[in-house]
Amino acid sequence: MSALPIDSMNDPITALLEKVDGMAVLPHVVFKVLEVSASEDAPPLELERAIIVDPGFSSKVLTLANSAFFGLPRRVTSIREAVLFLGFRAVRNLAMTVGAYDMFVGKTDKESLRRKAWWRHSVDTAVCCKWLAYFSRKAQPDDCYTCGLLHWIGKTLLDRFGEGDYERVEQMVERGVPELDAEMRVFGCNHVDASLAASGRWGFPETLLSGLSYLTPADDDDPNRAQRACTAIASEIARISRFRQDNPGEDEPANMPQWALDIMGVPAERVNMMLEQGIGAIAAGQLHFA
Image 1: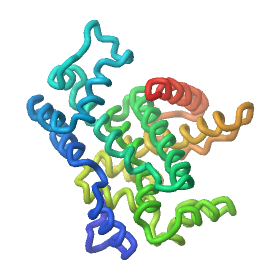
Image 2: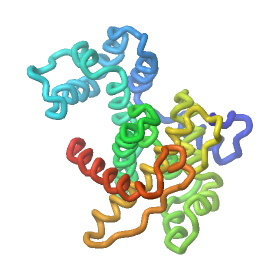
Image 3: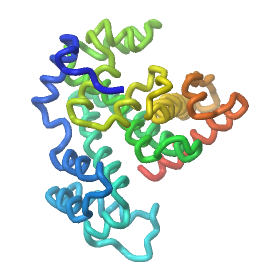
C-alpha cells in the first residue's frame, strides 16, 4: 500500500497538504534522525551528529538510556554511548514520538482535550502494537510501534489544517454516523486518507504506510500485512482499555476485525486472552511513559 500520488488526490487532500507543507510539522532534527536510522548500515557517528544539533532531543535520548527501564550499571553520559546502547530502532521510535507529540497540542481547551485523548490512544496503541508483534512473532515490534503511534495522526491533521470543524464530526458520531463517513462529510476526506497523504509526502517507508491503512483488510500479497493487522487489533484493544479506565466496573465487547486476527494467527479461543494481556501491556506501558 502506497500513498496516493499528489496529482490523483482530491481537492481536500491537496489543500491539506499545502497547509501541512507550510508548517514545521515535524522538527528538522526528527526528519534527519528518521532518515539516518532507517538504515542500520549507517555509521553510529552519523546518527550522533543528527542528534546533537538539538539539545532538547539530546536530553531525551540520554534520559531514555538512563531510565530505570533499562537498569544500566552506570550512567550513560554521551549521545554516542546512548546510540550504541539503545540501537537505531529505539532512537527512531523516540524521534517519532517526540516529533509527533507536537501535532497533538491544541490552541484551545476543546482542541487540547480532544487531541490529548487522541495522543493517549495513539501511545496506548503503539505500546500494544509492539507487545502484539512480540506475542505473535508475525511482525517487527519497533515498526509496529511506529504504526500504532501514527495511525491517528490524520485526525489531528484534519483538526489543524482541514477545511472544517472536527467538533462537527464528533457530534455526528454521537448521533450514530460512522466516523469515516462523518469525516468525509465535514472535510471531504477521512483521517486515513490524511495520514497516508502526509506520510507519503514526508517520505515514510512502505511498512508504515501499510500500517496506517489499518481500517482496510490487507491484500494477500502485501508484504507488510502483519503491521496493518497488528495496528487494527491494537487500536481496538486500546479503545477497550480506555473504556475500562473511564468506566470502572463496566465492560464493553471488543470488535476485533476478523481479517486482522486471521493474519496474526489468533484463533477464536485465544482472542479474550490476547485482549486481557494486551490491556496489561498497555497498563505497563503507561507506567513507563508516565
